[in-house]
Length: 431
Image 1 (cartoon, one colour):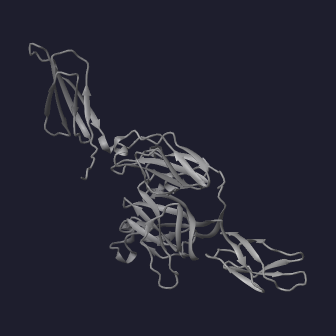
Image 2 (tube, helix red, strand yellow):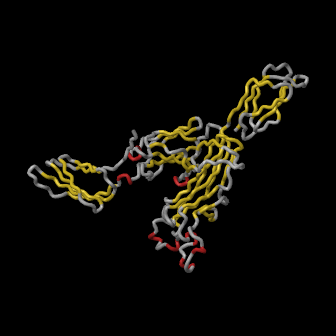
Image 3 (cartoon, helix red, strand yellow):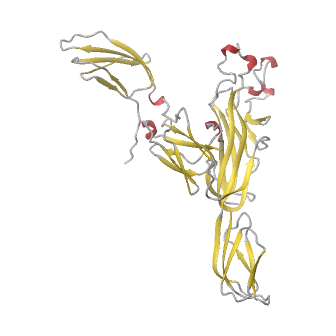
């Protein structure tokens, strides 16, 4: 049997009194009046839609005499109210992972159907939610802990309710704790400030990537003097895509940790100082805070050679974390929910890190002459090699040559310099 749980809003109206019973009338936003009677000192109204309500309460005694009505108005937010902020947000760094804990959610529409959203930014001084990237998938609203990759920077968190409404304020944890698992930067793609990748609905303005105007100059009618702004002709594109100028080929399928850097700010393209009224009327010199624009990074992967007709997976929202693949491609999607609201992306980059790994072999017979050891999985750089030789005689020695990402050669010789056969173990460490 399938069960579904629905969260609704309830209004509780309560009062003080000792009369026989009470009559409550109420209505929402000029709708019809509804009457409810009770002998108790409260009434529940459910389900309740958000809106402005009018209430009228009358007390009635045992003789049936009615009091003068007590009238009042109330705005009910219900499920449209944003959830409370995350509290008790803490981090413990253990074995290269961030073990996060937080107090249980208090909003029912977060507990049922909601989730915790955690983002990460490398900024330590003034971290901003809009400049952070999601780290890991959604965490259920019933959770009180989560484990994510450990990265230097700031972790930010917000509750998100069943309607997708986020907490108003984020809470953060700043850490500069080193990653206890050795990581190595294999590659970095930094798109700014040129942003030379393929574009659709976006444009480069100085050192910024931004949404382009929805129409071209050739599509405009009338005199130039009637145009609102060259940068917003026909309004701005609601959605634009930017494909990173290059992808990444690791040479073989590997486990890597990918993080991202993103700096972006929203602005109103028509909020020009020249078009404003008196300075004394300005709410802010820098203009309104624009929050309905976004820049989201996406990634797709393949285990094939990216240069030889690979089969790519579908585009997925990028999360900071570990990926297993050979090839990677990235794109950024810019969005705006208002025709004149735009976004300035000043930093857009991804970094590929790989942990050190160990490969070893035991009781290998070298044979007389040079023996080649081929690694089961190629390294990204020539590894450090350790040899444990067995049944060695006085004066015996060995030499390791031709050390590459894929193999190394080893030769055993006796005191006279002649090649001999010996048994050995090896250890190779690198990323």
